[in-house]
Amino acid sequence: MAETVEETGVETAAPPVVSRLCLCEQYVRVTEGAALTAARWLGRADQEAAERDAAEAMRRVLDDFPIDGRVVIGSTNEESPLFVGGSIEVSGSLVLDLDSTSRFDLFVAGDIYGNGTLNIGSPAYPADMRVYVGGKCKAGGSSCSQNGECCSATCSAGTCAAGNILGTDPPWSIYMKASVNIAADLYAPNGEIYSSASFSMYGAIFADFYHGKASTTIHYDSASVKQGTGCPPPPPGCTSCLDCGNQACVQGSCGACTSDAQCCPPLVCNAGKCILLTRP
Image (cartoon, rainbow, N blue to C red):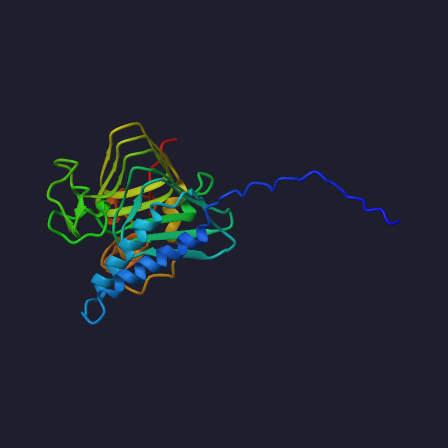
């Protein structure tokens, strides 16, 4: 007689499914938003407006990304440039770090503005990072795509609102509300550098105006004076010290200086060479 044996077991519950955010899908939303927005300008012969609105659509989606990153520039022994055709608005934390074997140039056509912290370069070799900011905030009535482009810090319907949140200060090239740590040679000749929080600097600053509301610490890097040594020799003849690598232009030729007037300020003449005086 066959005997039927019924086997029983303990039923194990399946592990709960953990919902995780897939950034890949959000990246698709970025390109999708840009494409749909730019499509509205098809056939209207206004490439600039299409690019502006597409960039604004991308920014709106990227602002919602739950990410915080650190960019390290490295793995090269040559100068590596990065060109930003517009402005940089820092809403979280922007960190541009530099590998010890690298040299990096950041060119910003617009301005740099934000409520987040800004960290650029390495204090160990600040002369290897150069930051060029060519623009400044825009007056009321100018076209815009983000608040940081406007001196009023308000961009509404593609137009800057009137006013300047810094009052009587000149238009800014860099305006940061949180702490700033820069290890670079910073070149912003057309506007003001304004910091309402602590500002720590390794390297050198060339700007139209600087206004610090909190503590400011600048560690001068003597290597900044030697930045032009890697450039090719100037062509024959000169009209000023700028044509001679900051050395003297004497009667149309680059040569040894005989007076401070022949040197580019703040350099002074010392034993035939234009040098920067430093404290002993």
